[in-house]
Length: 247
Image 1 (tube, rainbow, N blue to C red):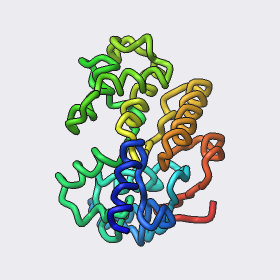
Image 2 (cartoon, rainbow, N blue to C red):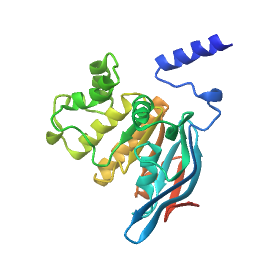
Image 3 (cartoon, rainbow, N blue to C red):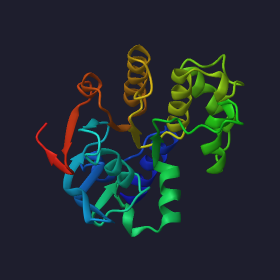
């Protein structure tokens, strides 16, 4: 039985999919009683208060709420880029905060993509080189071919050798999406991925994210102020003053 399971797991990996624990019956994301507090001049500031939810494989969720409600902090903790005061985050069976910072970075490289509102592209690299970068850092072979194919998928097959400064905002965001998806992540986290784009371009980027989510089987979690974009996700997680409230 063990050998059969190993064969199945290897086949799924080669297909770009992850065979999840318990035959995908368990949640892929489990955020459990998460708190985040910081100290400022007035004392203790509670940013997140007892956040608790689960998401299943392939599910899409929008985290919504007013500015300053804790949405981006929650996303950063889910990515392991920030640490909670207490509570746990399980992603694909891994408790992130049993890992040290270096191990979390290695885990992210294998399993997680992150899309920033400000794109975070390297200005001296071409679109192709920006998308190749995470594959090269992970020691993957065929980085150039995979990056070229993914840029073609997001409609930038003719812009491979252009640097970010000559790309529009929408094009830069598509490069950022290609970079996130090229590693075939189990989970994609996106912080206001359309926030700096006009409505039409933002809608196109959202279409692309959802298309890639369906094609790649990626679980998608995004922070957004746009109620229309949020309504296109399977789940809506409303944060109010650091607490999860009914949406």
